[in-house]
Image (cartoon, rainbow, N blue to C red; front, side):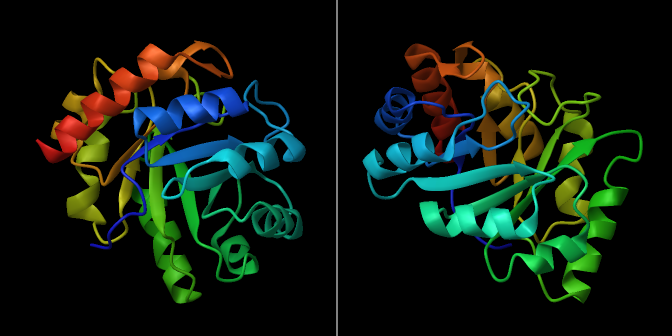
Length: 222
């Protein structure tokens, strides 16, 4: 299995202040949400200010929901992002339109469990555009992440045996209180949190962020 570019990601960063909170807590990555209907949506100009102040070594991930490929590529290059996070209905052929920019595809776990993930990955490989990471999130109608709903850990636990080669990022309802159990149960390569470390949608709570990162780091490294 490939080594992931991060282990602990804090998504939905909307201010320079919150970016610094995440950096001080020792997280490996931040997520910048460019979905206009999200309470965590960030303007490109604000995102520029955020990435400018980040210390080296923190991965910068851009989250997009059904955004045109050319727009994603322009923003990725402008902000010098490290990873594209795709939510929505983009087919594997869309990944190929992003050139060689690294992509993490989010899947909301529903009744079909991991079957859509396996089919998607097979098609990406056929197109010679492998995904960098797979993210599993909970299925909530009309929502693309940040819902606070816990994903089915049993389904996520089967990922390694059924699919295995592309690193798994676990999201969905994670908090400082349950992230260690999630890591121990599922065995993901990384974890991703948004609402679980917030004081309100789009604003991070320093105590919760620090507690989450510490709990995840301890679970990953012992």
